[in-house]
Image 1 (spheres, one colour):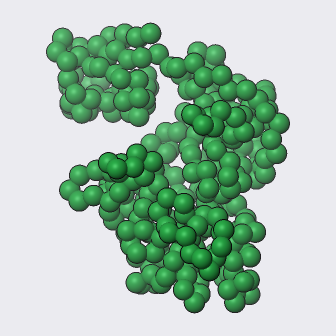
Image 2: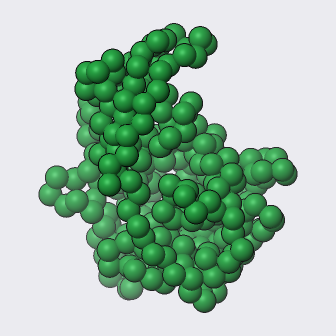
Length: 310
C-alpha cells in the first residue's frame, strides 16, 4: 500500500536543506535509509524531485512511499548474555554465529527473536514503522560483541538518532594476517557494493560511500597481528573490507580472507569490544564485551601470555 503525506516548510530557522534530511531529522516521518527502502517519491511544488534536492521556506512538499512490510517475528527462548539492562534498554554480548534479525535464509534463531522472548513487556507502538522491535544497529553474523537494543519506541529513536549523527563510539578487536605497516594510523577508502558478488563490498575511488577506520596495533605474533579498530563511519563490512584493502585481512573472514591452513577451521576473529553511547535517563555510558574465548585461545597458542592495553 502506498502512503501519501503533504506538508509545507515553514521553519524560519532553515534557509536551505536537503529534502531527505528534512523528512528524517525534522519531520521524523522516515529515516533516510527507509526513504530508499520504501521507494519514496518526493514532489516539490508539484514537480517530482530527487531526495538530494534542497528545499526552502514556503516550499510545498508531497511524499509518497510504501507502507512497512509485515514481518512476523516470533519470540524464541534463546540464551542471551546481557551486559546491562534498565527500563529502556538492554546491552547484549552477541555470540558469534547469531544473526541480528530475520531475513531470507534466517527466519528464526536471531537476536530479534530472542529479544522478544526475554523482553516480552517491551513498549513499542503498534503502529510503529520499525519492523524489527528492539534492534537499533547491527553486527555481522560472524562478529561477536556488544550491541544495544531498545525496549520502547522512544528509546529506539533516542539511540538511533545518535547512530545517524555519528555520535556513537565503537571499538573492535581483530586478529589480522601479517603485520600492519605502522603502529597506528587511519584507513580512508570509499566503499561500494561489489558488482560481481552482491554479498560483498569493494573499495572504489572517486565515488561510493565515505568510510574511515582508525587502527592501533596491540600485539604482534609471528605472522599475524592483534589490532584495535575504531570506525568513524558505519558502512556495511567496513572493517573487513578496509583491512583486506590494507593487505591485512581478518583471520577467518569467509568473504574477504583466504583460508590459512595453519589455523585450520578458525572462525572470524572480529569482536565488538566497546560501545560508548548516551542512554535515556542515565547519560553517557561505556559498555564492554569481554574478550571471547577464541581470542584468548589464539593468544595462548601463539606464544602470548596476556593481552595488554585493551
